[in-house]
Length: 470
Image (cartoon, rainbow, N blue to C red; front, side, top):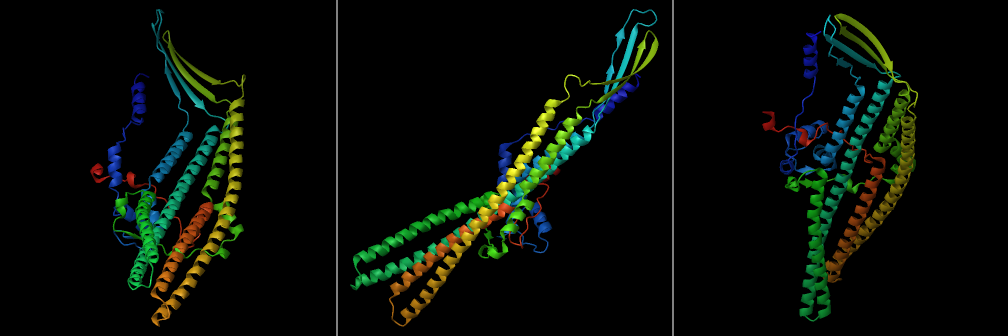
């Protein structure tokens, strides 16, 4: 037996995991973030894998929503947090699958017996789980792992939603910038016309002052919108998880911005069904409920005690003695009522959360659909106003060409047309906001051409740097 003890000890120590420190260094983390680039080779591999038919140009210079979504899935730190939660849940499944270790005991002693003064005792305890506890424990861990993976997909949708909002705002603010620049040019031209008329006595000083004030207001609005352009670009970079400098030299486009889904393609029953079946938080709540049921089954099984089989050996007075013991905990003072009651209450809570979430989803989809219908109607009226002013603008141009209208009248119509275009941009913003809320309600794109790609198993920070590989 003495020869076997060192071998057993060596085997136990060889199977142990050693600790490897991994300290966080904020300066290094900041440096890594600021070094993020859209020319990252890992990003290119990820894009090629998910856009095989498109093969986007490299390095990236032009983006649409689909490409930006992939960039955010690769870089955004929120997904690193969700991936870590999945890793924790998967490690919990490993823990749940483990079996209890046996126990080895050594009890040396001394006696004054003349035959042999030394005593040696060796005990071995082998626990045996009963009533399927390991299976219930493993089932609960598997359901929690499924919930963590669904939470990762939910985080990915939230990242995609923020990218969509940032892209819409970025593109629309650029349109507003172009319209305000055009308005500044028209108002500057109108001021020149008023000053020319004043010089020949055909206009009054108040008319010139009014034109000058209108030009100053247009320039003030232009300066404000120029500041918003930089702000929206920064917001887009934050939604992607990259520094704003990574977007230098790039442009964004999204053809679907002006092509919203028609009302007749979004039936209320279809939208509600899509929300109840597709929403990731609904599916996650179902997984959590299944985990609570497995937890209750585990606590019920704990009413039945585990067995402990304990063979033993003892060298006493020069005589070898062998024993076999069987022990179990007597469920006399309690039968695990407290933990069972807690698990039952936990299951009821999980069921109530699921029902509450279902009701919330139904209400959210109904509100989002009503908001989208209203926004579409508003956009239709804005389009009609633009069409009417286009007709007036063409008629006024013809009248000026034949000498039947004043150029100032043409400038006034052009200013009205630009104001209507800005109104249409505001209606587009409201429509896209309502459409985004509707997509969030069902957690899937409503454009058939767009899909939510798979989240990569690793993020940008998980790829080892070259110097670390060496």
